[in-house]
Length: 123
Image 1 (tube, rainbow, N blue to C red):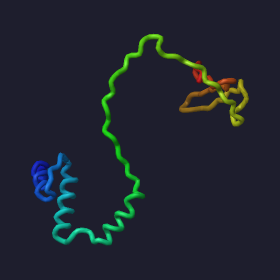
Image 2: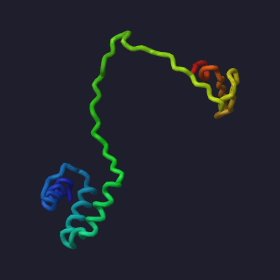
Image 3: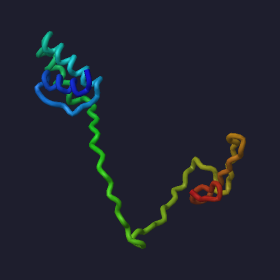
Image 4: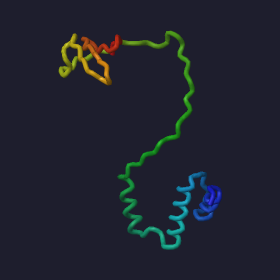
C-alpha cells in the first residue's frame, strides 16, 4: 500500500486521521491495532501494571526547533571581562613545555601562569 492508502486505513482502523508519512510506522501501527481488535486488547492487569510503570519511565520529549531570529548588537554594546585562572596542583609549573610526537610532527604546549600557549595563541 502507498503511504496515502495506509493513512486512509489508519483513519478507518483508529477512527482518527494522522499526518504521518512513514510507511513502516503506519504499517506497524495498523497491524497492531487490527491484532488488538481481533485478539483482544491488553488485560486489566496489564493496563494497571503499565500505569504503575509509566511515572518512572524516562520520557524524552524534544520540543520543535524554533526559528532563530538574528539579533543585531550595536557596536560597543558588548563588554568583556577577565576571567580568573585558578591554579591546579595537577599541572606542571609555569614555563614547562610539553612536547609530543603526533602524526609525523611535533606538538608543543607551554604552560603559562594563567593558561597555555599553543601555536602562538594563549588559551
